[in-house]
Length: 240
Ligand SMILES: [Zn+2]
Picture 1 (cartoon, rainbow, N blue to C red):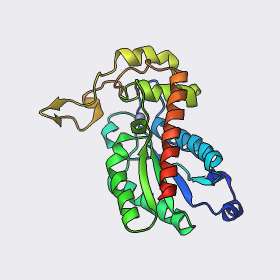
Picture 2: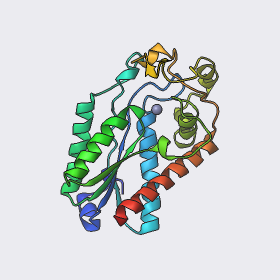
Picture 3: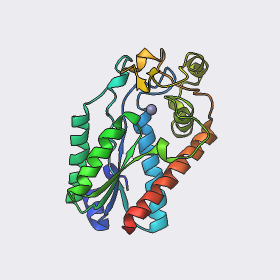
Picture 4: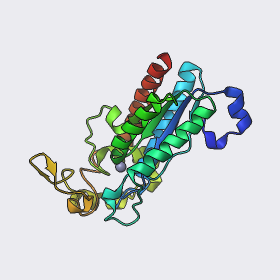
């Protein structure tokens, strides 16, 4: 159940105990993919999984409104990128989960689309669980799905997913250039240390990997795989 589209009486009538909270970022994804890539992907995975789980388990799953800005300062060299500190991000996620819990939600999965949010989410979800606010787990879609397509940044996986979910937002005429000017790897490594704090130090156009390696049918498989993994997680939480 998409919370933003429901009324309070709808929510009261179904008394949901499970919720998904999509989070992402608003940050550069190369010249071909939208700044909203990470939060659009998280929302699509959450919506698909909620529908599937509601059918499968005959239980209401709240999909909370997406938190669209995350921990993305590393992309500040590229126009349009927004970010908040880890403290602000953790506090915002925590207070949203607290308000869900106030209405009787017991289990929350924070459905994440951005690598830079992972450390902050692990910590805040652990705290919410240990403090008995709600059993809260982080789920990062691209880590949960098995695929031959490499991750990169605005690379194969993300571009394939976008081609399936929001094809109108992929600038196909720029993909060839995005690909030829992309970096092959994330960061600049010496002795196991990434020398670069910001991504513009190692990628000129913001892309890492090959954005043309996956098509919309790969994107469909990624979405379905991620939603399946998330349903598995929901079932396991439900059982605990
Ligand atoms: Zn991304």
